[in-house]
Amino acid sequence: MVDVKKLFSLLVISIFILCGGHINGQEKKIIQIKQAGSFGKDEANFPGANILLKKGNTRVKLFHEGALIESNKSFFYSKKNAFKAEGQVVFTQGDSIRMTSDYMEYNGETGKAKAWGDVFLKQPDMTLETDTLFLDRIDDLAYYETPGTIVDSASVLKSNRGKYYMKEKKYRFLSNVRINNPEYKVTSSQLDYYTESNKAYLYGPTKIIGEDYDIYCEQGFYDTNSQQGYFKKKAEILYNNKIINGDSLYFENERNYAAATNKVVITDTINQSIIRGNYAEIFKARDSAIITRKALAINIIENDSLYIHADTLIGTGPSEARVLRGYYGVKILKKDLRGKSDSLYLDETVGRIELLKRPLSKKEEQVLSQDQKNARNPVMWFNESQMSGDVIYMKTDFETKKLDSLFIFGNAFIIEKDSISENGYNQIVGKELYGDFLDGALNVLDVIKNTQVLYYLYSDAGELVGIDKTICSALNIKFKDNEIEDISFYISPEGDVFPDTELDPNLRKLEGFLWREDERPKTLEDLFKKD
Image (tube, rainbow, N blue to C red; front, top):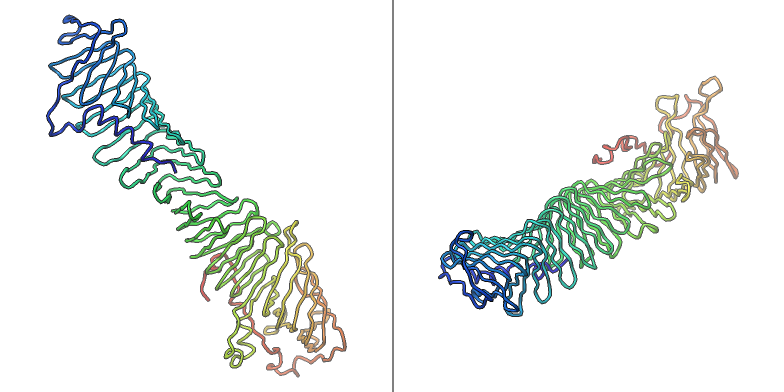
């Protein structure tokens, strides 16, 4: 941020030099005539005025409270303690300040001054240019209402109007305010600056463009000492190909840090992914963000939105190597896909999605039943098929953005409610599951190691033939329209088909069976419901 205090200090200095300090409560001193080429009067046209003129190289010189005013002509009103000067007017105070203008008026009694016509105010390290500059010492106000430009060694500030409030020690720059600095550019409708706190307050549409970030807001402030900013009303920060929006944004340039509150949206413009929430912290140097309070990530897969909710979402890495992590209460939702787990890992570089569970403690390993352990497992629903296991991996094709493959490691369990019987469930259990997708739909699944199957068999007429219970080393499942079409057993399957009346109801569910339909999110609102 520009050194605003230094940049604007010439206005204060020039005001007090021009008028010899604050007028209230002090003895008023008379303006002195130091030099003039000639002296005259014209009571008809300029009643009460001493007309002082330049002659040869001798210019008119007036002196007041340490300030010297030179001009080619001056109308000096001794009774009013005032003057009007014109023609190459030069105002100087030692070596500290020099102001030139075409015209100047000054009244020592009212404390009001006006300089106009190509006003150029110069201090050793900065300048001010405008057409007209006013001073009202009674109201402690200095201002210009014509476009002005302030220049120091590093920055240029331009505005259509500017004011300085002495009592408040506040500058106000109005209408088309622009600051140009080698490190950033600022444009604003209004910028207020307080000299004591060194804070710049921003009103109306404002842009701050830095070397590697852009900020927009319609209300906010920037602390020039600590280089911290707070922005509201359509606030937005853009850096590292990410757009950060929120009801309010906090920004700290030195730490490369930002925080956002309420209606937070972080958009990755390269990966076309979005993360939402009501609170976020962004660490630019680490290229990471933490989002909480109704956190929701939106990724595009198969030209469809994949919604991911978790208590906390963490995005790390640049856009070309982005990783998303979700912790606690993870739920996912897609048109043909639902899911739930304790945590999630998504590597956007390779299109890998992992659904993970919190590890069981030693005590939990000993006392929990298999059903209770399975209740902790990640679970997914592909249309009518429920799949769960210790760990679930999915891969998407990087180019097509379509689901490519599926892996389940540890206690792989597939359940599908039988479409005809009232309380029947087709079930497949194995140690591991490997599957692939065709055009985004389940195509083939292989289940291996300690595989068990319970399957309801029907005739072509739709009559129940029996219930198949088989144990084998591995099996292959083919899908059609996301439903099981055929099952093939491998390596010495052992089993039988039981008539419906002969199979005990207690034996119709494999060990670890858990139908979790009530946990299945069906709408976006369901993602945020507590189970």
